Image (cartoon, rainbow, N blue to C red; front, side):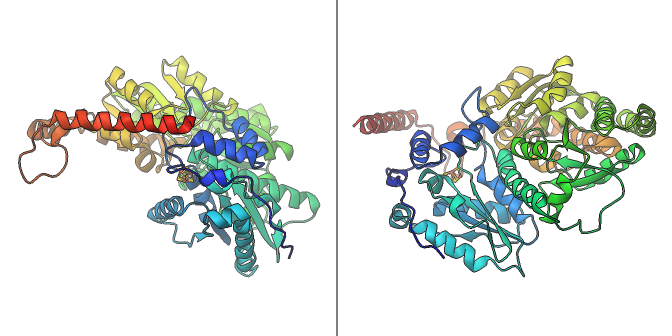
Length: 507
Ligand code: SF4
């Protein structure tokens, strides 16, 4: 084993207090560039464009890639980052039922600056690389190790037959946790594509089917791939694996498809790998009547299916969707926002169910794979906002005064304060089937139940009016008193601190 220590340029990455996702982004970016991570940051900037504002307010991006690794069989996960980041990420992954160990290589200023951290990571990887247990080990650089240039690319590509995948997922380079899923999925696809080019690879677990397949790009409710498979059957096609995959060998099957359906449109790095493998990519998804008809046509055309067959598939499935939409109409004005990447699909389904949708905000960027959905929604008068900020989501809610706000936690909280019924996008909307007839009925159920809650909100508001609001928020033993002078004092204190920081930065 070679033991030469890479020298890191960047003790600065650890200088000062409070560098992380809440501050210090410019310093971390500059440090990472100085430490040789410019290529990675440039690629991320191209794959995951920012703007119109800087970055959506969302969870730590690394959670996305962490979760993808934790959901894969025979895959070990190691984080390299500040203890507080690792604590938060580990906590969240167990909160979401990971039931797996998250490996951690700790560091301090000395091991970071001397390059010992890289050696520690390499030792950890060698210790873990047991082919009886693992197909792959994913090691992730969080913000500080990325800013310090910890060179994961120098790790061996494979140890004892176990693949080693090193990725940088800094909060200052990858805007959302959704896109971080693509960072890992793309890295794995690239690795698997190279393996497939070099020789024979493992067949799918249940053997190779006789129909050409459609790989489904983007995490979805488990029943959806089954429903999609049924819709593809009359086209003579079958549903292939969902990417991110649940085990390594599925990556080969995913690459070995006839067409890739970019159900979630932000998987830019993954799409690059499918492109390189010569696959055709089709955007949007079979949601609602128009969405399903258009999707079947585009998938059919991409797979060289005859027009007759495409018409037959449409004739078989569309009446069932029409029936489900008519049976469960949605009446009411809705604003919607989320960070999963499926927001536009959900909005389409709501519109087709009869809802008056005014605004859709997505933390993900606009890509050409979301064009079909964006154009359809805009033609129906819906404002579509990519890279939406919390402020934009809240402004839309204030402007459109919806009967229901679907959104992220802070949006839902604000809506409830305003007695607007609200639903969490992640827990309640994206955890249901969306595709085909099943999606039409299921979404209407939860949305209508929430819309029916308005009267309860009004009663609660009337009953609790003024309690726990503004200066009275929190738990009190005595009747809370408003102290505006305290607020003024604290405001002045914060302004002074900000000034002091600025002065220090200029020294
Ligand atoms: S790794 Fe995540 S939690 Fe830690 S500083 Fe970066 S963005 Fe924040």
